[in-house]
Length: 527
Ligand code: XMP
Image: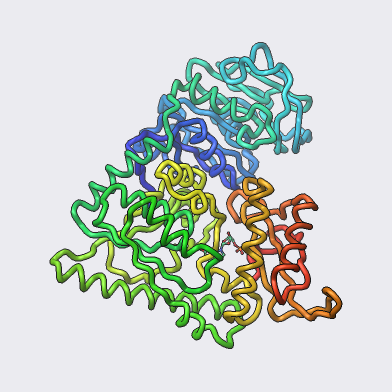
């Protein structure tokens, strides 16, 4: 996959020096209403110039600038005449490349640190309190600013904690403005983008839709398009966008594999169709999946079976549709996929340093499909996709939906998947989801898998009798990107309510337990 500038907007390029900072910075830049993309630090000045950037942000990273082999930036990048902000490691690279000094003084700063403005803080920090709380994470520091630079802030351990060269529009901060723990972090980014670089705040869901609609029309022309809806946010929004662009040239396919959560099929078949007017074909493959899964407990084997059956079901309906289209003399040439920007970046398309993770597409479609892909969300992050979904008028239940694995409840039953067990899990999951939403906790939770330990039974007592039921595990996690996660500290009264309701209302469940493991070492799903 090659990275390409896919919008007509000229981007702010975030130069990635490693770790996970670049993604977060790109998101914060977009939150400031300016389009941004990530490039690896190995990009040459010519490659960077070719993308026509309106500004550059040099990210933090785990290295030390004067170490052998430390990541560097082509020095000619600083001759491009593009406004540039250096952050943490990027700040040190900027200082070193432009003739300043970086040293290991033995003074480290990690976590919340007090920074004091020097003078009025210049355009970057002007108007902010003279003292502010910033988030630091560094061992080295800039010991001398390059010539032409003014020091804008300092801390107890770091004399040069921020600097600026007004003439060249080069700025830098030692701290991490992209993390929420830096009190005025977003303001620092906004000052750089809007005031220093003079960029307008005009990247929003409205103009993304208009731009994507035009782009899709150009790509597809009068061709026919197929889309697989999974019930999740990404496929729902990408399908709706394509429908907005080409109307009835699109047909959507939804495969009910019987591993969906309560109400999902109805939401897609009724609410989604009502709000988009999309032509939808539902394939009821519940029986096929269940019989293929009979007697299987091994998680990897379950995944394989579900993937295989999904492909079979899709190929069957695809063959029918292709035959129908061919009879009308108009073959189906395009397939919609809800690929997001983090998938592109993680797959190595955006940066040379990010972790490589093979991304799961919509339920694992066959690789040899002879379609041209339409991927209208390729430049977007999840929260932007949600904003577009809302703007397109999609049902709140679908737009707000937590990430849900393609193999569905099939991997949230530890043990064999049966119709009865699915019913138990569906009920428990619906209760947990309802109560979390009622308590207003959806924003704090990345996702909350509800897991049935089908092979475990324990003794309990209910009414006058002894029970021998299954435990349900609640796995609420907070995360930025699912690569790492922490367990969400849910209020006890909400947990108590969920537990009471599940044990009272769901036959066969006599215990509810809470998973308090971070990722790593645990994964988010149980399986
Ligand atoms: P783990 O369990 O690896 O999950 O920590 C990370 C994220 O990926 C989701 N997940 C999947 N998504 N197909 C998907 O579309 C899958 O097979 C799959 N397995 C895990 C999981 O829900 C979490 O958000």
